[in-house]
Length: 381
Image (cartoon, rainbow, N blue to C red; front, top):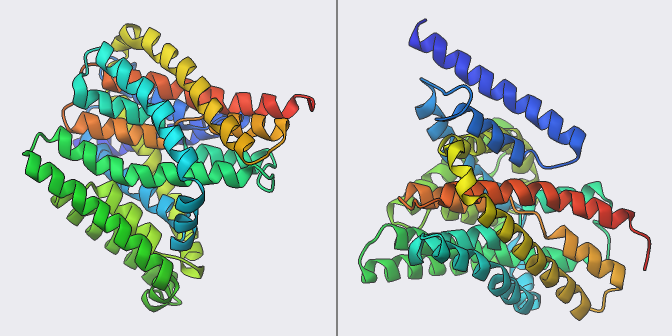
């Protein structure tokens, strides 16, 4: 068989498999992320059907997936919303960071990841899945609940924290000089602050000036600018993902709604490819060595994340039922935990980071939505 025919067959098979897995996830009422990861494990080395010719294409698609994920995340927030979230949710955000980053970091030290690798595992256990949480709020009819703004303020803080954490992790993992690492971190913080400030004051005007009535022109403009900024950010060791996130923040108003509609299908496709690629990079035979640690982390950080949501809702005067909903909503980890783990793998962090991150996300992305649905069915009390 010719290499080009084999490439098309492999890619077609992967994309068709993603469609089947997404449909199955919808039937089960869970995020498709765990099923995408399992699909990647099945196609990788040591899996059922190892891929032969499409690895390079999937690698490129995975990079696009990360960029689009973070860009679309940035679209969810305006500069004003970010400033407001920082003012109202900072205390809960720092409690969330301390309570859920620390267990991952400590377990990383125990399993031999070292101080730098353990930082990546701490990031994996820290950040909730914005995508899964947003879908849960919509599916369960909780969008208008009184505790929902509290949940969203914590998510916004996490997403902003990730814009700072990613370049720090990237700079540390690259093993550069102390001066170079500090310069990258300062540059990242400056860009985040500058972007939020400009978006809060001039976001609507800039968006109106940049966008036209043609969806074709808008799509090409957004993709071009996002990839250019992501590439420039990567070049100066800030992280392509952070660059894409900042571009998303800068787009607001009607332009953001139009771009969200245009790019959502592309985001879903390449994000699915990204999760498959992450699964491809892991040998399923390594799972038994980390399964116990992954389960322990899932239990510990499930408790700490739920406690964070409960405490934040209690502090805001929510009812007991509202506190339970806030606690359950935040449990799921997903796309951004895998983004952080993927950054660690690309930076050369080994020692079981990939397998334990995959196993942990498989558990949390599946059990989080299930527990939230059980909370909804529980009588008032």
